[in-house]
Length: 222
Image 1 (cartoon, rainbow, N blue to C red):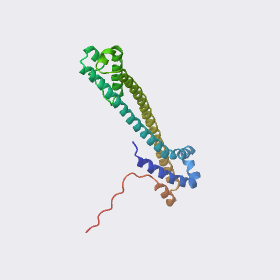
Image 2: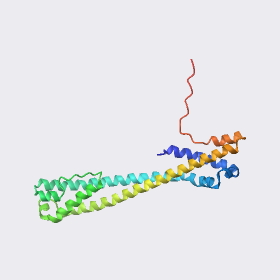
Image 3: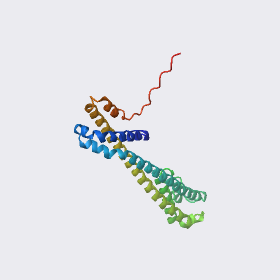
Image 4: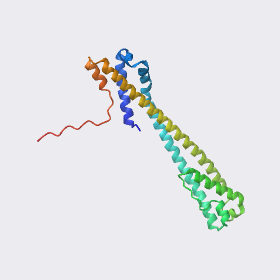
């Protein structure tokens, strides 16, 4: 995946190329076609915009995930407390099974938490007197239902944030690829156009983005 440095390097290089094209577009366009230069002018600002959009989407995704994790932990805590009351009260095996006692539940997997909560609610509906006898009140069930609804909502928000982040990242990477391709084509054309004008050609060649560190100078000999 391209790094933020790569986006910034190509954005800065694009700005320099825009300045050169103000003078040379008429000379280079016959070599590359209007579509290449027009596309480049449309795409290069997207490197900055889509990078910011993608960053915002990733932050939104992270925030949504944190909210989801907190909601899952709160709900799981009440479900486990209910299971503990049922098991500690030594209710019969059928009730324990219906209530989900012993069933795996992982707060990192929302479905297992929601399924665990639903099992406890359904067990209370079927065996209200038995569950009340071990300390589970209607208010506890109502709270579990409310937390389940909240977790379902946060889960949907987190999935939407994930999809948005993925789409913006895809758009950002596509814009970068188009800009890189356009820069390569335009500079290649400049090499042909300015073959007899090395000073002008050098201005084009100098804008090529570099990602490698310059070689360190050799240590002086003693």
